[in-house]
Every structure is written in C-alpha cells, then in structure tokens.
Image (cartoon, rainbow, N blue to C red; front, top):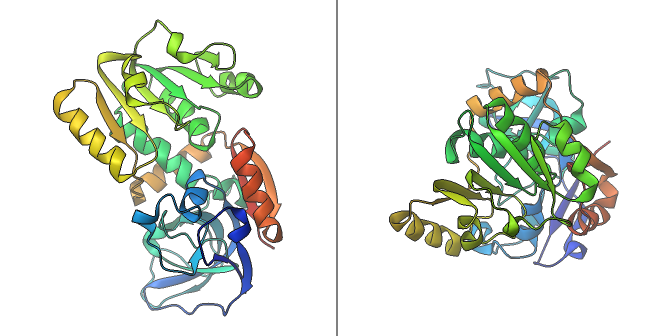
Length: 313
C-alpha cells in the first residue's frame, strides 16, 4: 500500500510517498480502506518541528489526522461496526498516520459516516467539527444571547463554529477576509467584519466569548475586546501558552482557555446529527495522494474557505 511519511522535520519537501505492507489488525481493531483525508494546520506545525515536545522526535513519522473510509476488516471483539460500513474518524493529532491507503483503528476512533454527505465532506468533519463543538459547549460554554466574536471564521473550525454558536442562541460576529464575507453571512453570522478594512482592535464592542482561530491574536489584545467575565479561546497548545493560561486564570476574571481536542463518542454522534440536519461543510479543494506536497504547500500558504481534502483511489 502507499503511505505518506517523513524522516526529518522541515517543509512540505520532507513528505514522501512510500510503499509499505498493509498492516494487520488485532482482535480489538479495524482495518480501514481510506477514501479521503483532510488537511489541518496542525499537520504542518507537527512535521515542521514546532510541536516536537508533544509529537516526539523519533522517525519515521506519518501525517494526516481525520479521514473517511470503509471497514475492510474487523477484529473478533468488534461489535459496533461491520465490514463494508462507511465510517469517518480521526487519529492522534500529534502522531497522524491517516494518509495511507489502509489504516488500523480502534472502535473509539471512528463513527458511522452519515449517508447524506460525501466521503470528502466526511473527512473534513471530525477534527474541525469536534473542535468547534468542544469550544462552544465546553471551553466557552456558549449560552443564548451571548455576544461571540470568531476571529478567522472562514477556516476549517470557523465554518462550524459560526453555525454551532448560532444553534446555541448566541449573537455571532465573524471576522473574515473579503473573499469570505458573503459566505460568513450565509453560515448565520449576525455581523461580518472584513479584517482588511476594519481591524478588530479598533472595535468598541465588548464580547462574552472571543475565539481566535487565526492564531494571531495575543491574550492582551483579546482582553481589550472582552467583557469583565469574558472567555478567550485559542487553538494552538504549547507548553508556554498552557503555562500562561494557567497563571492568567488564577488572577484574572477574563479567562483564557486553550483547545486540546478530546474526541468522544457523544461528540461524534452530535456532529453526525448536525451533518444530517443541514450543517454546511465547506470544501476548499481536493487533491490526489500523489500531489501531497502541493496540497500541503497550497493549504499552508493560500487563504481559503473551508478545508482542503486529499482523495485516495
């Protein structure tokens, strides 16, 4: 089978498409024939070496976190899935490994793919969809009538964050580029701000929840936009930001929460129900597995609406 690996940290040029044996499974595992894998910003931070404290430095390493596919084999103790079933899922966000023609997973790694969405859409859903759910329902605990600002609302998480915040009854302000202005309104944002024309640090409004998906907003900048008991959520964990968050939350009424994705069966079920009932899933572009370097290079350097997906034959 074909699989994407890398043997040292660097840019997209370190990614290699290699031939490996199809892995075997144990009694509590499943073999998935992968149909599609989505691209996440965390991917290039891991293979770029920025997250080595969490990912480790042993090689070779693999890439790709969330995926869709078909159950090829099921171990003898598997009860929730059967051979031939269409599924979606995700692997360890710091270890990856989904970019391969076949992968081995546990039951807790996957969920049934809703029949109403494509394999490409299903691959784009787990990481960003579960992240948006965790932000809205746990980290920020968004409630009806709260004022929520989402900075970087046109990316993978942002598309879902806008829609889920509206379902929770919040009033949503989405900060996007010019190209995504119309789309953000279609997702349900009450107010849309084009950051190229109106810098958010000039806003006079204050927010109950501020979610930074651009990874460019500092805690001090966020605090200036928050109400006295506001919550700031950022999405790139590191030892330094985790320590800073802990110290801030000891002494400040304006809390800083950091997303560390924790997938659950309940979250998967909620996400699947949202997909069935009309959650918009935006695909930016699809690529062939052989174009993996180009796919990651374009995803990293080009701003796009939604998520890019690599499609396997």
